[in-house]
Amino acid sequence: AQKITQTQPGMFVQEKEAVTLDCTYDTSDQSYGLFWYKQPSSGEMIFLIYQGSYDEQNATEGRYSLNFQKARKSANLVISASQLGDSAMYFCAMREGYNTNAGKSTFGDGTTLTVKP
Amino acid sequence: DGGITQSPKYLFRKEGQNVTLSCEQNLNHDAMYWYRQDPGQGLRLIYYSQIVNDFQKGDIAEGYSVSREKKESFPLTVTSAQKNPTAFYLCASRPTQEGSNQPQHFGDGTRLSIL
Image 1 (cartoon, rainbow over the protein chains, first blue to last red):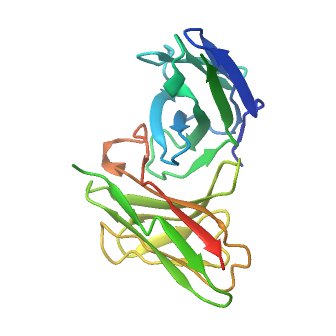
Image 2: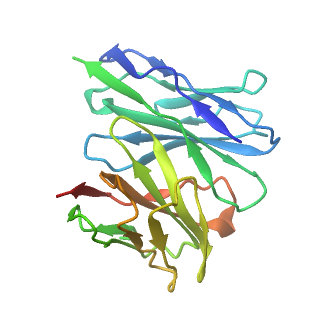
Image 3: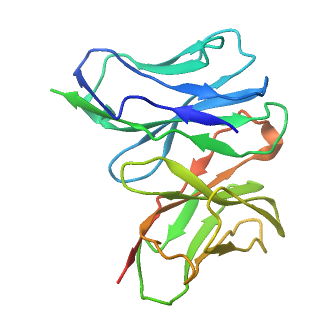
């Protein structure tokens, strides 16, 4: 069974600094996808970034980048130049079956990020 | 604008009562999902559907039921058998025909409480 572990229940970062949110995963599949979502206090889930298990380069999307270390089964999210609006809960999720449309995802328990002014 | 609409935003259930949460999407997505989120925790999959008239149980299906009679609609019924229904419920959809790298799109959620 697939499992996502986010070991940091809460993180603090100073505005304009970078922060890394940890995510490790466990799967026996060779093909899988990793996603990060942001959940503000209002509750909606916002997609941030995706990394496929066969992607050779780390994914980047604006201020978000993914530090993907396949051998260590980790997919850490890096947020550069933190802004006050980045304060939210962040979830790492994995979908097995890169070439199938099975679609089931497993989510971690999340990390609450607080950006200090 | 395309999106997912969940209603109501807040819902209260009495003892022994079934309640239905609505989820409608106009994104033309084949796959739809229901998740439960307890305070300070991650999302747990209740049910999912990859095509009309077909759905599968997720990890915590007991006490819940769904239907998928139309592509755009995936209502969730919380039955009286679900003894601890107080939670935040999120509906999501995904385009399966464009590959598995597509993220899920989420609604704004429904907060369910027991009276």
